[in-house]
Image 1 (tube, one colour):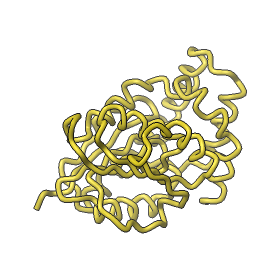
Image 2 (image 1 turned 90 degrees about the vertical axis):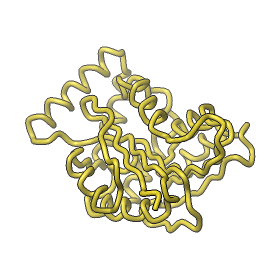
Image 3 (image 1 turned 180 degrees about the horizontal axis):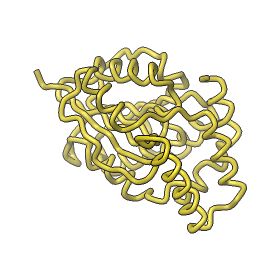
Length: 229
């Protein structure tokens, strides 16, 4: 599965960013919600781990909103991280890049926030549950886990409606048919879970204050915190 995902994203790395705003019709609110859930002040110093960081879109937003934050970007696809390196080059030593399967990699340090955008839905349900447990372990007490991701509908009817509405909205935004086809090809590797399932798994892992703070068709932002004591 990891190899298939890597191949799909390596093939589309060059065009990935170009179509982002049209493929995510709720782009601004989606990413803004993720940023607003980071429990720090703009001048705070803290460590962030970005799982499945891709081309660094979310990390770049965090770096701008929190100028003293340090970031570690994990991604399976070197071609995607190459774009992230170019995007975040001005940050110098504030940022670190790791090419690895984040679902299998172990962390040698703790982080104050773990974030992910449009990545975890590639894992099977057992992999998601395992990852949530791992994230909990390497968060510092009081740290936050924020997952902005693609999700499944609560049932077959709602899932089909959401996906049909998503395609309609991308076309209303004048998405190129080639970009839409490429996205749909990548989505063949997707294994999204429902919001409800993932909130349960996060609670089982030990997270508190678990919530879905944003939902729009196939996109949602989930979060939870590690208890301070």
